[in-house]
Image (tube, rainbow, N blue to C red; front, side, top):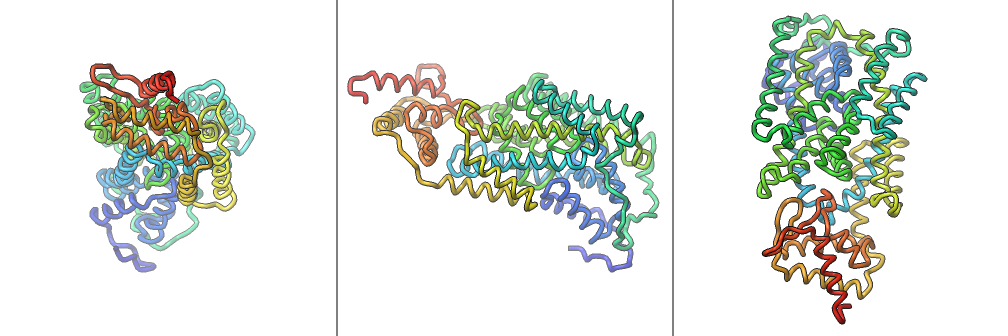
Amino acid sequence: MPTPPEPGSKPAPVSFREAFWFWLKLGFISFGGPAGQISIMHQELVENRRWISERRFLHALNYCMVLPGPEAQQLATYIGWLMHRTWGGIVAGALFVLPSLFILVALSWIYIAFGDVSLVAGLFYGIKPAVAAIVVQAAHRIGSKALKNGWMWTIAALAFVGIFLFNVPFPLIVLAAATVGAVGGRLKPALFTMGGGHAAAKASYGPALIDDDTPTPQHALFSKGRLAKVLVVGLLMWLLPMAALMGLYGWQGTLTQMGWFFTKAAMMTFGGAYAVLPYVYQGAVSHFEWLTATQMIDGLALGETTPGPLIMVVAFVGFVGGYTRELFGPEHLFWAGAVAATVVTWFTFLPSFVFILTGGPLVETTHNDLKFTAPLTAITAAVVGVVLNLAIFFGYHVLWPHGLTGAFDWVSALISLGAAIALFKYKRNVIHVIAACALIGFVLQGLPAKAAPSPVAQQEIQHLFAFIEQSPCEFSRNGSWYTTKDAVKHIRRKYQYLLDRDLTDTAELFIERAASESSFSGKAYQVRCSGQGVVRSGDWLRAELARYRAKPGGN
């Protein structure tokens, strides 16, 4: 660990190697969302190491907040670029993301491969209600800063009505809000001044390597030639991978569509990751069906508990989509998910690098310029309405897991209420809240059953287990084929989980909840028997149950 500079003395020049190890460390410790990540950078870079002054740090941060994309990652890229040219920015920004990508790929694989195991299911039973409370807190946090007057409240309300009642695409909401902001900034500038920026520096921690009066480095001065070069290279970095994906899989290929969709998503992240999640939901869940609504909630929970930008939840979306679509065949499910997660991450974060490397030299000309900040003010207000819609969406799926016609989940409601109290009243850390709720879910998973199926139902269920195991068939779960022995072992674990919660007391419920589909991917189990076609396991078992009941003495 480098020795902090002496108080009152200017720090020694920082080598590229020393900066590399710092950015790598930052990638592994950057928990707490953008506020926590920016706080860590401020403490390390401004207060402890004094690589950059308070004023220059906040000047850069104000610019990053105007851009779409994760401001903490962009800030790291900016400071890396300012210190060590283009490669310094690339390394700083990439190392802010890569640890999170590797961790999320591993967690996504555990989730999708073992998500039906009762332990994992129990943990996520507690986590889902916590996520619903966290999204409500995000809407409150953004709204408390953005909704400063009646105009902002009106924009937020219209955005909510548009997306909730009329399913208006998120990009159109952003475009409409930006237009209102641009016009409003001219007609009523006092109402559209930016409220999300950071005030001027008030503290000094001693001389910094890049101080208030340090001349702008030569590489950071504006140059039309350098601007053109960065734009061309950035365009090629997008165009070449996209062309390769089109050549390999065609325009309608899953990886190609992921690349294009998340390029558009990268341009929508005004107001943080929560702002773009409704757009990701509209596309990834409703349109492309890469994952289910339940998985979207679980993915957000994983994103909240890993280092790096919260928008890294898109890596989870990519992994699940690639895995369940079996992009490389049923034998290579992990690699399909890992490649899809990497593709999604590339196209999501590439624009952020281009924004910093092209716009860095222009920071002074745009800082606090109303014609740039007024549209952002209106967009942020619209984001409040959009995030509120997201909170309602999550709450619906958590509290009514089987739809409004099904039972209300009072246990989930109590967990969500407890999480909200911890977040709002006691200001607890998000990771602590998720961990506590996961523990509650784990404990509930281990509670004894309140009741058991009737003797007749038990006999029918045991007959179905024997029927599966003795059949000359194979079972498909999440794209992989298993022997009937392995299938029975897996279904027995799910059956025990349901028994522990008194969730199955008939053979029909056993088939529906334990033997028809994956609890996490929502993908139907399939059966392939010798000399017959592939059928859904639910239909196959219901037909056998009907035959068993029709036999004399079947019950």
